[in-house]
Image (cartoon, rainbow, N blue to C red; front, side, top):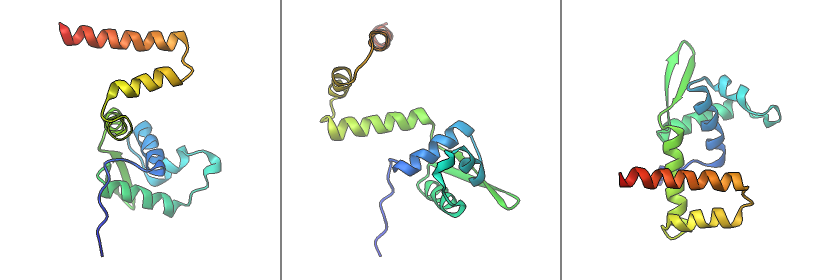
Length: 131
C-alpha cells in the first residue's frame, strides 16, 4: 500500500480547524467543536480524526490531560499564510509575486483606503530594505 505524501498545505476543513486552534492557542476536540458555527453539525469522532490528521501532518501537537488530548498549533498562522501565498504565487502566477499583487489590485473592488494601506505597506517595506 502506498503512503500518502504529507502535504505542506491544509485542506479546507483542516484550515477551518487550524483557524480555531490559532484563535484558542490550544484546546481539546470539544473546545474546537464549540468554536465552529452551530449549523456545522460535525460529529465528535470526525473532529477528533481531523485533529489527528493535523498532528500526523505536523501542524499540531497534542498532550494528554487525563482522558483528554489537548492540541496546540506547531505552525504560526502568519507562517502558514506565507507558505500558502508562496505556493499560490508559484503555481498560479509563475512564481512572480508582483503578478499576484497586480491581480489583487486590478480585479478586486478595493476602496481608496485599502489601496492607501497597501501603498503604505509597500513604502514601509522599501524604506526598511534600503536603510
